Amino acid sequence: MSVVIFLILFLNISNFAYFDSSSHGTTAMEVLKLNTNPRCVSMGEACASDIDDASSIEINPANLVMIKRNSFFISHSEFFSDIKMENISYGRKLAKNVGSFGFSAKILNWGSIEETNDSAATLGSFSPKDVILTLGFANYITGLTKDIEERIVFGGTVKLISTRIKNSATTVSSDIALKFPYLFDRRFIISLVMQNLIGTIKIDKERYGITKVFRIATSTLVSKNITINSDIIMPEDSFLYLSLGLEEKINLSKISNIALRAGINTRNIKDLDGNRTINLGFGIKYINYKLDYSYSPFGDLGNIHRISISINF
Image 1 (cartoon, one colour):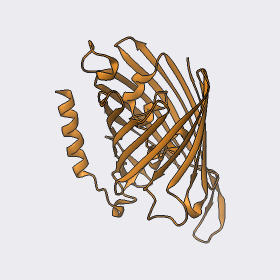
Image 2: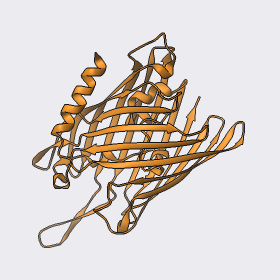
Image 3: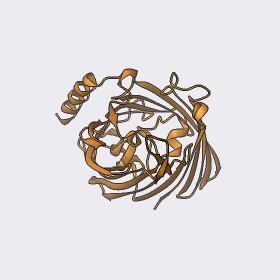
């Protein structure tokens, strides 16, 4: 029954989303759409069904159940114009068949901006900042007598969102997600994710809704070391776009490997000149330690670099 209710809610809310370019600027807090995980970004941001560390709390909270015991994740992103983003996440398995929980903090620093008056005289400077604190959980909702791969998983989050330009404003929001059982001899998985379902925030003198985002995500295990991911992403303030990613792992030993990744993303295909659809990256794993890097060209604006370290213990 809970699955049916979720699907009805997903379809109904999606019908009310604008999904067109004329909706740009009608919602707030773009930081909520920025992905902090280099592995995901290097695959075109297609990863909502294929992530098993603490960063899943921001992408698909249902995947918190994939954490074996404890997971710690930290990332740094370098944008253009001195814009930087930091993230730290932690997830923990509670007990067998009980589920998992996690929390994260994401901070976007916009750098220093010069303030001027109507006569272009400099009045000083200010440093805008966005902060998102997230608490999440995931649990099995069907078939505890079945194998884990045959169960439906529900995940959810509660988020405290704060933004500061010159004055501060706060709001709360939430995400919900479903991860369905594996199909085709456990080689295919699909997830549904609904992000930023509630919340409005007052910026200057206007109040804006938080940008809702809906995802239909799939992951296909082509072989033991090759994975193809595909996400259909539907933001409230623009037309839906497709993300497609490929990862190939090269085993160096029984305890280490290198992952090569590439992906495409059609989000900015009409908005920017220059290369802005292809993403590249790699990962290095040694025992329970992982280092991931992604490179994302962003048209004429420049390039974006992300790096992360994660530990599963």
